[in-house]
Length: 111
Figure 1 (tube, helix red, strand yellow):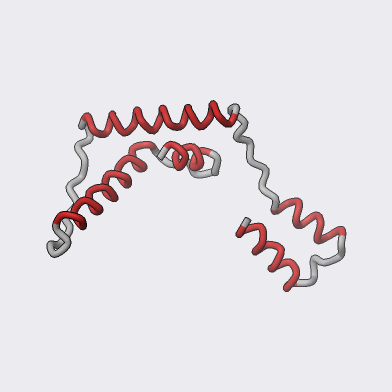
Figure 2 (figure 1 turned 180 degrees about the horizontal axis):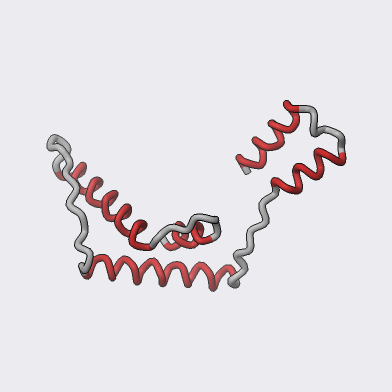
């Protein structure tokens, strides 16, 4: 969860920590329900706003995020390659070649 939270901070639309904890809690409850009572219908019970579980998960996420940042040396600057791709296509005169451009763009998305 720490990696997911850190990864969301690198994008334009950050993810709120409470949202991440709520989704994680929902997935855990659903998985536990499926393991114990697969024949019954699943009904989600939301976590209390002031519950200790929330604060424990929040602290665990922050600690995990800090450990990841330490190991990365706090170097989390991301340079997306799409601008470079457009420049190369222009220099090579391939900007009008839609198939080539689409294939190159697809390779970048997959990488």
